[in-house]
Image (cartoon, rainbow, N blue to C red; front, side, top):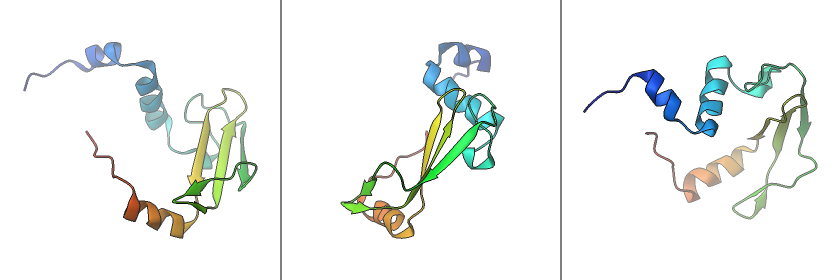
Length: 96
């Protein structure tokens, strides 16, 4: 397999992939209170409202985090039964 310099790969990546990589490099989920996209600490959380999220036809508890500086948004499913239903009924995404 031929290898490419990382700089070439980064130049050819779609912006959405770069945003994801940026989030990983800066540091983790918004639960920390810091936005992984823009590093702002203007992060707010709302639990189970206002959206209703269903998995396999069942309403599930969730936490929504949003950065008020850049609009980055994350949702975490906090319902263990819903998550086990995902394992049983959804197709797993294989890492590349």
